[in-house]
Image (cartoon, rainbow, N blue to C red; front, side, top):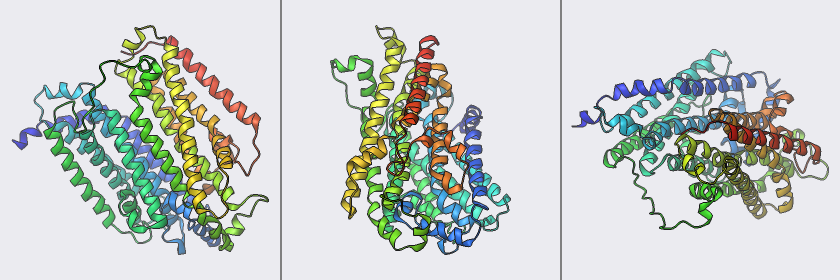
Length: 534
């Protein structure tokens, strides 16, 4: 009986590998190259032990602890511990995103588009499709483990040894397997791919936030998060393997639960019930904008709550920064005060850059939803009515712009509320808003890139995420890795003035807005002239 449920799983594994013959190698090569580039950047980055220890002192402040995790090996901060401490968490998040996207594509998305039904009409077991996805993802993450380990050890850096490199790779692989299990489970609970991705990213965001709060205030809280387990490996210092085994053991339990639920449910359904629709739609729903908002309402609310919590989590650590800087002579030398501004205000500029880039994710997702609707052939019924292509694209773009502004504002409000409650001399809300909302032109350029790719060639919409990922790398890590300035200038976020430390350059902001408008026009012209799929 059970054997029949897994029949032809092997054939489906080869089928998935054939479909992903480009996507999986791109993910693996990109993550491996990013890791190698980072490791080589750390080698020779600091001229002597004194400079390395200065960086170690920087890592002790609460804001950095919240971002990259609690420091370890800081008393001897060589290249290996430095890279693992600062990069393992962010690389693990990228691996988790890879797993979420690939698993959703082969489970809920295939189910929505009727592929699973077609496959089940063949002599294939009930659990074969899910099991094949699980096997491919375990193999992918295992291959990633080996690639990362061998690549890091082959660099020949003294503090990056073989055992530590394998643990670094295994920590990443275990994270990927854990979020494979989580996405498989949530694919059984949700009734569509949008819900699966939304719930999976919510788990990922909650894991990051709960770890950040735990690392700063209560270490026990960090052990609730799978990302906290991974950081507990203390790679290249103590090399603890048990957090990896804990992560894999939990993954097995979650994956088995997902398989059990998959065997129980009907094809096309989910365990979270969907509400029946109203008999008559409101007038608001009859417009393309109203329809786009209604389809993404749950995601918008979830992201809005998440962005406010993100701001609160960062704001909660601002109260400790001044005392930290004041009690640390080395930090005082590294960050000489700028006349008229506190050290917290200077540090706030970096926080605003990170928050603005994180707040760019939801509006891009809201915009690119149009591509998914087109791919499923759901634009044809809309365009067959008295709705122009420009109005349809404009509705999604307007939704993206409005909620991009709202997401950024909510994150800033969360930051201010938390900072106001913990700081002896609070920074005004006006200063926070000015420092944060100045990033709107960069966000509009990202929206413009999304519109341009949808209009010209929808298959290129991944370029939007590539630019955002590049921006995060060069803006956040650029100064730390001493990257050349021209690399930051390639990102729209690299041109935003760091308020309040820098003066506002209205000319620069005007140029950025002009570029955003030009990209948007290109997208609208392309969308009006190209063929619509379906």
